[in-house]
Length: 330
Image (cartoon, rainbow, N blue to C red; front, side, top):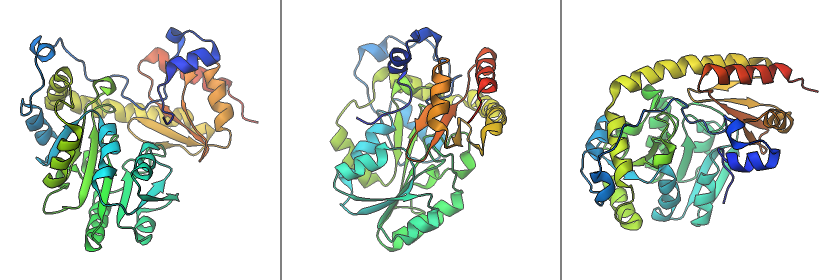
């Protein structure tokens, strides 16, 4: 199993700080997520059914009917490489580690390209290219036209472009989910998640958008009832709540800028709506300094840096600011 953010219990035990005393900024999950109302008893008592309204709500939200609900985008990450012919796949790195792990396990040849642009990934001449937009953890973003052009180039060589848009909900204009699997981009596959922007990581709901033949294959592999009834009910309501979505985008933009400004004295900060990336040679020392004060951030060792999520209330903002004011790099 690979290591991920949010492992708060392990941090509490390692640093001998009670669980309730931690500020967890390690995940990039919206700390003010969609407010889940009481759920009807029927969603607990009956087996989940397709076409209960979730697919329609998702199609309206993503602008595309070529989609499949899955138990979090992680389910698709693990399944997808097993459904595509074994081949080489280029991945600008660093990126979410589950992607190369899953493709290598399925027998594909993964070419990690540290710091690569999309143009360099295409120049690797692999049939497939996979990337995150915005990238996790570096925050690097790709423009919609750039991605569609890449999909067109890969189509000419019989390849596929896979785009993980787990953190993309706050920047809809650069999303390519609306065209995945359509005539405009039949070789484009997009993964989406309700865990980040909507703050519903525990519900385990994601979507795969792509050509219908691929989605049908995935249904056969994943089997029935892959998303629970309560999760389907929550996801359907959240996707249809346009007022909350608009307000959340405004708040996240302001909070992201506040976090960027808070971290700016420490180095060259790369900001997204849900997290900031701070590359620094002092990553391990800064991570440990904050952890000793009960603040958990995500440490990356391969490309030294820390990923910092958004505090959820003013007290948390002040706590992070106070800790950073105490930090003195060597």
